[in-house]
Length: 538
Image (cartoon, rainbow, N blue to C red; front, side, top):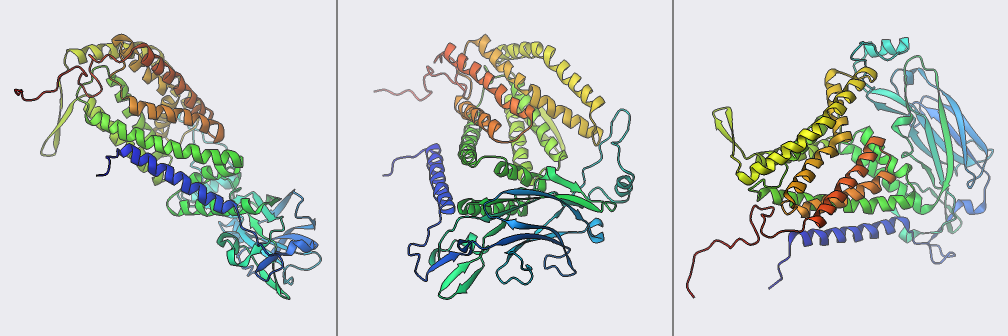
């Protein structure tokens, strides 16, 4: 018969297959097979191989097909495919655009001295210079009631329009790329992602493809957006150009499509912007490292979740376990969930946070031995009794929280008062949630200390769920790598490193207090206990 395979081994095996498959797919994206016989009719030659004189022209229009007129905003006369440049131009906004309308940019690459509208060998792309986003809610000082200073037109606009109505925003950057290498494509093995950007014409018996023009949508970040109002007649636009390799172009096309797909599945503009930041602000090699780090993070998250559920499912005694730490984790996860709800985060982020909160509530129920009895629609909560060993652990836990409260409460209260006076919020509820979240981020690791104190008093760590703990510890070090790679707030970056200190103390206690098999383990039983069974004679 087949040998019995554990669920963990099966998960790790599937994970390795997934990583190998992803590496193969990424290789297929970056590498493009060239045409092996350059003189054969099956090859598609580059138009740039003839080194033609080119110009880059950028027009604006109210419609993507230029119906209703177009305006030239910039023309690069001496355009060189291999020369990088950046130009700052002022764009006049039509009346329809100022009234919450849309404006498009039409980017042409054409022969020098020939109008792009009459050039048969021109290539062009159309992209939006505007996007719709909800305006930022006004924030006021909860003490004085004063709002942020606004222009008169902005005050009129905010009073006349609803806050939940999307408003047109200006994209202040336009990034253009052209593939500079003279790559010879094989007509029988033409990549599908490149095909939609390729224009081909017949020259005798040979097929010639025009320059591969690409507009980088990933460079459009939320931080660069500017809200458009009726009084704005013109806005600045930075037009930047750089050549791009064919492999990077194919990779960028797939990433752009992935971000678009995520938006279709419920990701907000803010969520998509954070993903864009990973690709735009990160080196390509760091990006590859990010993929492997994220994959292992997902694996350890799943294994930690599996072992954590298994541990608490069989948990019968709270000997050696800090019930205050369990209660704190439940409170902190609920606070973070409410904070994400207040920030109107995507459902793809909210749903896992909500499930995590429910699991932490279930842990509290197990830790405090709570039984719920329903009498009609009225619930009655019954708390189980503690034995002598659990009472001893509870005494140490209460003593640790007493010492911790001398440091924790003044810090949290002073931080909340400071933010109330100097920071502006949408409402009192927003201030409460933000203050609680800041307390969780800044001082949440302190609630891991009572468990260290209980371990010190009991001189034992056998009661801890070490499998789940080790998976979470690996994720802690993975978070350290993310802290260097991904752009994040300084407080969150420091929160990644502070957990390392507590983890090292746990490891020291693991070495200092070897597992005593006469003590109870995480399932409330001792290794030296004899299994209960019917007595029998030999």
